[in-house]
Length: 303
Image (cartoon, rainbow, N blue to C red; front, side, top):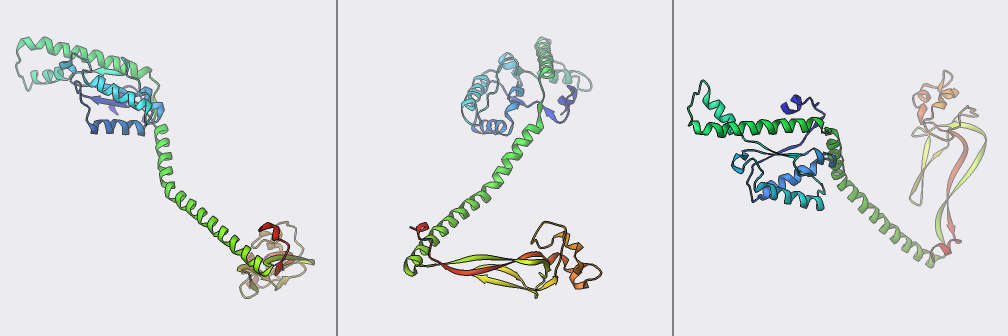
């Protein structure tokens, strides 16, 4: 965060930086796992913004040492295998530092005042100069590099989280669909057997009778009846509250239509009980009845 502030980057943007010790010929399983998980969580757009910083590199002559080929091997595998990310590894993305000179500086000044062999001073001076040069090169590269938008990575991770949360519900839905298909196939087989045995099938037919005048009917419990035919329930409204009832709305037979506020059954001329339950009344222009019939003309649909 301090580095980002020094370079003038805002909190919504960032540069992923990996700190790695040099001369590590064998990359252990934990390091490899952490590296792959890091690149998995980042958006692909962050690949060009990833920088590799090798610390304590004086012992490897300010080079990545054996860690370089081992890291390059992992990056090559990630390019062709999940997470399928092509991370650049070159002079622009690799930086080598050494902190020995800083330790020497802190130890040699008050209040520590530790005296070192003068022969080592040139070594620490070289370490300091090289680290300063690398820091300047790092800052210059980051300044011209387009900042990675952190929200891109957050959006990607949110999408992954949502997909993971949907896995169980989608599996349940898929199973439920399969169960329903099996039930339909079973019912179809049973229906064929009934038809073959009796020659007729029970079907529910809707019969609509237009009213000579529209009316508002009561949908309150006690005024309406529920008719069950062949396992199918339907409401039957037989108590008129306002007949005839002419209203200027075209929503038809819908319970709770706000157009009913203009009906006389719910204004000052109507009863209080009606006004309290005004949204339980449909406006009817026809009477629809469910009739159970025996069908004998559908043989072709089941053979």
